[in-house]
Image (cartoon, rainbow, N blue to C red; front, top):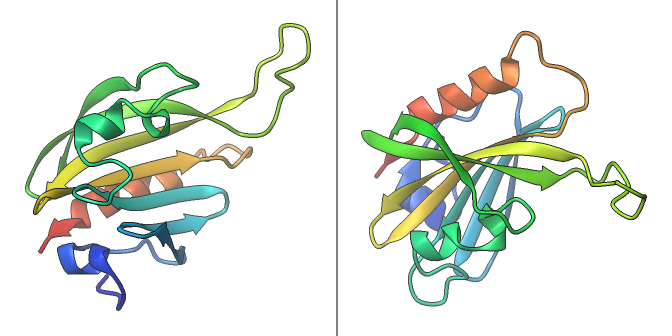
Length: 155
């Protein structure tokens, strides 16, 4: 996809999964594109450099944005993306379900997977989050995520 717009499109190209909605978000230097369908989200977040919330990949990995309620992200493997190999991390994201104030209660967590890709002094966080309470037995969300990673290219 080569949408008109911001810094993300100047640094990278990708194929959006068919039928997924595209929404631009972000603030200041940090941009976000979200591709979503049926409670599943593929996000491209661009950080790094002066004026960014996270100047470096190390800063991002040490932040709440990469943690599971304060615990560091879990490295779960590697993936081929943008002509190289990137570590894949997993973190839990509270879904809003469950009562953390009930005895023994804790919020339900959806699992987000993400990888980091360096890009001209900045970096992308590419992530997949499935918050749909319905199972995906055909793995359509997973397949869309895998196809997206295969298509992601640095310009």
